[in-house]
Image 1 (cartoon, rainbow, N blue to C red):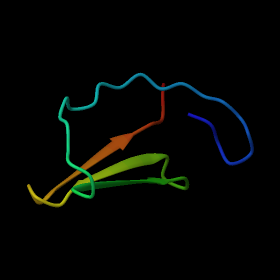
Image 2 (tube, helix red, strand yellow; image 1 turned 60 degrees about the vertical axis):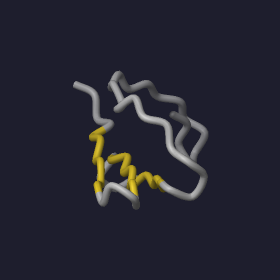
Image 3 (cartoon, rainbow, N blue to C red; image 1 turned 30 degrees about the horizontal axis):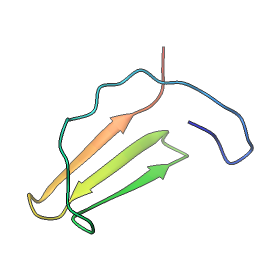
Image 4 (cartoon, helix red, strand yellow; image 1 turned 30 degrees about the vertical axis):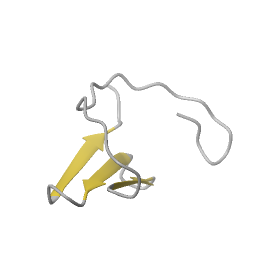
Amino acid sequence: MISLHGGETDFNHEFHMKTSKVNSSFSTYVQSKKTLILIDIYTHKVYMFDTVTI
């Protein structure tokens, strides 16, 4: 992952293995919470992944 300031970091996380049609899912990254959010509009599910590594 590359930050807004150009810093590069890694995080080890397994994402759900699912393919989606165009415009059926959306994603965003909340920098203040270091959380990746994936939204599947057809299954009405929100996946939140904490990207902070220990």
